[in-house]
Amino acid sequence: MSEYDDWTDAQDSTTVTVDGHDLDVAYVDEGEGGDGENPVVFLHGIPTNSFLFRGQVPAIAEERRVVAPDMVGYGGSAMHDGFDRSIRAQEVALVGLLDDLGIETVDFVGHDLGGGVGLRLAAHDPDRVDNLVLSNSVAYDSWPIQTITDVGLPETARDNSVEEIQGMLDGLFRDTLYGDDADEAFVEGMKAPWNSEEGVVSLCRDASGTNTSHTTEIDPSDVTANTLLLWGLEDEFQPVEWAERLESDIDSAELVGLDEANHWVPEDRTEAFRDHLAEFLLSG
Image (cartoon, rainbow, N blue to C red; front, side, top):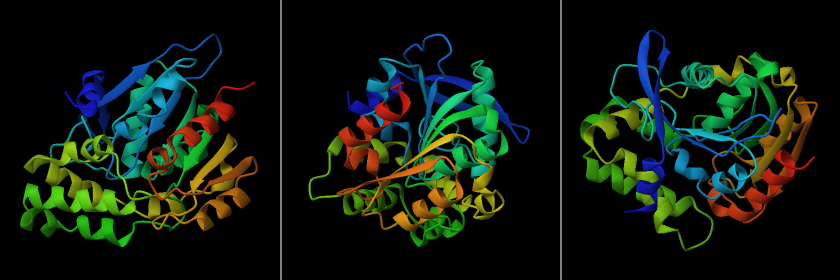
């Protein structure tokens, strides 16, 4: 079995309702928090899944409860056609999952689109997010990037085979990880959910759901959570200038830049990412 298979075997599943659609959500739920300690939620972006955080979840779960879902339309969650995958809808799905698990307040770690979901949740419901970590997150009108816009065209699903999409994704991850030696387990884990016709259509629908309005409609200054901006400094998709703007707009925000890290920061700088999370979320 692969590392990704081990990860998915450890997932639980529940059903949430988004815009009248009942959708399965797969999630990892590990560790136990002490009295008064918030669970830590990890949320990935596009075109990844919760396996993105394989290097961080076990360590944090030694001291805190950790919940790491696959967004709807991603990973082991619902992939059938016919529902909204925008970050507005992902916020609704996440709240549904937290309510189902009886979780009222969280510490939140979000990467890419997952960061955009966390930003919305922290702005809309400040009491729900105590500590917020945004890593190379979408914000303002920083997204979608051209690559994702192209994937979201309907003809991408109609005109490309599963093998062609797998090849595109393989090149995307290998070309945008920092350094020359990509970890094969990571690349295969990122590609695995899209290795079917249903997966290809879901990926294209996910990409088409990248609605810039869903971050431009919120005001980051409404975020009251203690905020860590943990940013890969070599990112070509979400450059550090967006983090600097967030730091300026969120009163409690601190920017920590990680060199030798492109967009996939939890993979590029696994240990440093984990250490900064532990210092921010576990100390004190």
